[in-house]
Amino acid sequence: MAASAFSASSLFGSRINEPLTLISSKSRSKLNSKRTPPVKISCDYSCLEVKDVYYRPPGTQINLLNGVSFSLPEKSFGLIFGQSGSGKTTLLQLLAGLSKPTSGSICIQRYTNEGNPNQSPKLLVPERVGIVFQFPERYFVADNVLDEVTFGWPRQRSGLQVKEHLALNLQRAFNWVGLNGISLDKDPHSLSGGYKRRLALAIQLVRTFRAQVPDVLILDEPLAGLDWKARVDVVKLLQHLKKELTILVVSHDLKELQDLVDRSWRMEMGGVLREECL
Ligand SMILES: Nc1ncnc2c1ncn2[C@@H]1O[C@H](COP(=O)(O)OP(=O)(O)OP(=O)(O)O)[C@@H](O)[C@H]1O
Ligand SMILES: [Mg+2]
View 1: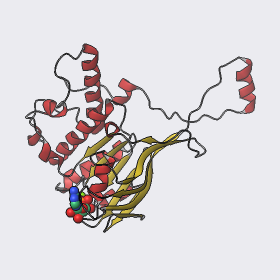
View 2 (view 1 turned 30 degrees about the horizontal axis):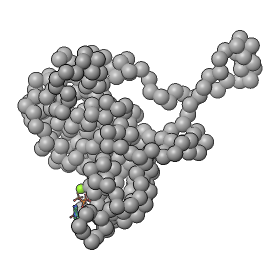
View 3 (view 1 turned 180 degrees about the vertical axis):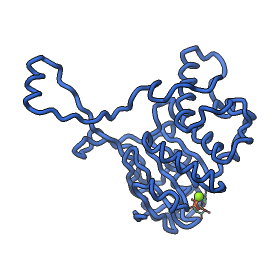
View 4 (view 1 turned 90 degrees about the vertical axis):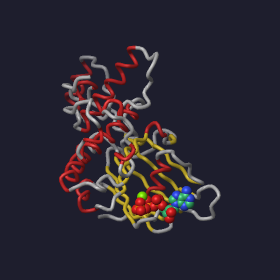
């Protein structure tokens, strides 16, 4: 498959939140007299809401998470930091649906422009969550980029429409993470550290694009094990993705990520999460 020459926006158009246009009453009556249909302005937004989550793994006596609550509005960047063993990865696994909370809820709530809930909260579903684990390159299984990113796609009997849809998703994801210049024949293990992380992100985006954009993109220690150049590269990439996606990162690298962060929390030992500004 050839590398993409299209931008994501040219392929898919603009996203839902159009800018609000204010119209004076004079021009409004002028518009009305020409019987212009009323313009519906939608300014609602969604928020990831985690409420009072407790987690005790089956067969154990200790809670790994104790009453975790936080919220993250769409297209914002959240950072969780804290001591090793405090429960950060455990929380991410619950968000990704890999385990279920013992109690509490993990939902997406939509709000009106005035900040009122405009429908009942929807459970966050795994299909709408992208998760990139620590050292994702360790889990690459294929010997070329195309097979790596399409691993798990339907191989047989999928019609042209399905194939086209998947190809567009791939193209869109590669554009978003800046992988569009790369040869799809390349061995994923031969990529630079930064490009391996880009590929890991693209895999998650392609997976979640099947439903729409992900409700949240989660990254566990995205800078771990990278040299300085790759670290700068990944920070820039996250800055870029933040314009389109809601991102939640677990990291010890507070200084490097500081400029991106909208909300931050410290996970204390025993799985207690507290908001703490950087
Ligand atoms: N299935 C499990 N059963 C029992 N204990 C577990 C289980 N999974 C994780 N733990 C324990 O839960 C605690 C939190 O682990 P977790 O991996 O979430 O920590 P972390 O904050 O991500 O640490 P790090 O910064 O080192 O990655 C640790 O003490 C870990 O040993
Ligand atoms: Mg961890």
